[in-house]
Image (cartoon, rainbow, N blue to C red; front, top):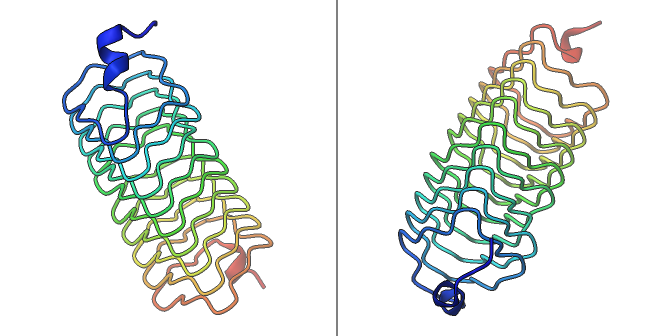
Length: 209
């Protein structure tokens, strides 16, 4: 979809695009660093290569959007990222609390220091993602694909990792206190210095003799 002249003129760093309808728009490579996009409709928008660093995306609709972009430090609290493509996206330090992430793809994404506390990540693709120091406390990671993910020093206390695939993941120094790892796949994972106090490891590689 071609951008109208009016919309194109608004696409600048720090722009106020609150409640703007940008659904289906081609926004590849635009610089919206620090922009206010609260409540905006970006469903199915193409944002690959865009800069949304430090942007306010609280409550933004991003269903099916291509977000292979730089979102470092952005606030995505309560955002709808259903089926969004975030492969390789820069999400360092983002706030994703209470966001909707059903069927989103985070393979190879950079999520170090991100706030995912209590977020529903059931079945989400996080293969090879950088989650060092991320807060995943109480998160629902049931059936999530975390193969080769880097979770060094991550907070996973009370997280639901039932049937999650953690093969080859780096969990060195991670806090897994009280986590549910029932039937999780943990082959070749690194747990050096990890805290498993009170965690459920029934059916995992850890309780095999």
